[in-house]
Length: 156
Image (tube, rainbow, N blue to C red):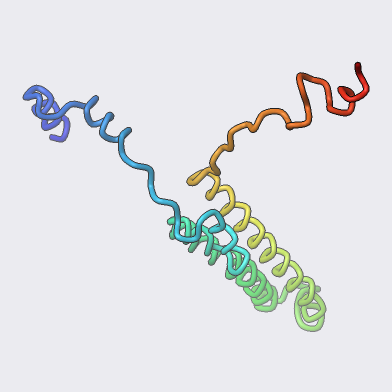
């Protein structure tokens, strides 16, 4: 149905794929984000904020949940399962001794999620809003055709 409609519009010269492509190319660039070139720094405060500020809310919510809930939820769930199934050496007092190791692992997972969120937000910022390229200013003013002023002063 969709192809038939497009074919009918093209045959009637009411719509041209090349004209549409030209219109898309001439669209103005999207405005810069509200936070300027520093949106990615929002992920330092809480993972996923940088992605949300860069208009990627789903991605930001995944980072929020993945870097905070996932490591701690996995640690608590694994401790509960070890206690529930009474695995020898991993239940009762032995499990209580392993709790700091599980907390350390969850903390390391949270830290990794924070770092990943900041790096991802920075890459997203560079991808969506690249920094402007500065023109080359040329050689420094003290160089005159390859001879420095110090050399030019002593040559007669």
